[in-house]
Length: 217
Image 1 (cartoon, rainbow, N blue to C red):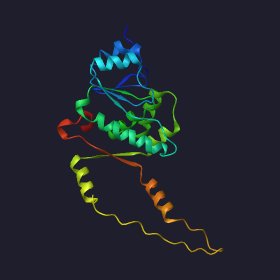
Image 2: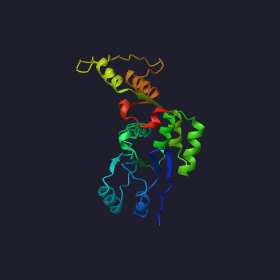
Image 3: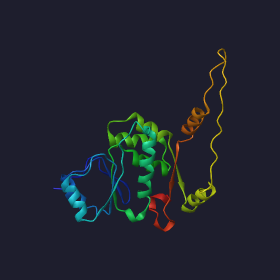
């Protein structure tokens, strides 16, 4: 008996999705002829699934989606794991690929790349995930994905002056009298400015001949 994984479905030709994977789904996996698995879950595959993946020589990309409140905010975590996942999915060498992602973020970002409007992204997200997450929906609404050509990525590194000494930011001394209004330190202003403009996530495209068909839609 073939048992599909929870919330299984086709995202695009050669790319599938599900929210979890267990040994009950091994027979079904054999029908997909997978080459790659994108695992976006803090829980690792059980032993039987892991043995099957190794036996079939299916490449597994583990993307950490566990937040660390001491070092990163939630949106920054989503951005990092989203960019890494998209780089895997945009490479045709990784097809056919199954995304194991209980959060639903990765498919949502794919839809943004494909030009879907937010209402359509939100409707699909709620349909597939079931229990909506406010942080995830907010992230999918405000985040912008910018695809960068490989040569542009190299040019940006060159133009940024790699190897050059970067002058330290100027320190502004705050002289404040008891009656004056409070002044915000420059460091806090710069941090606020970075957060305000940190909604765009740059993702480097693979070479043209290695791009998955969905990236050219």
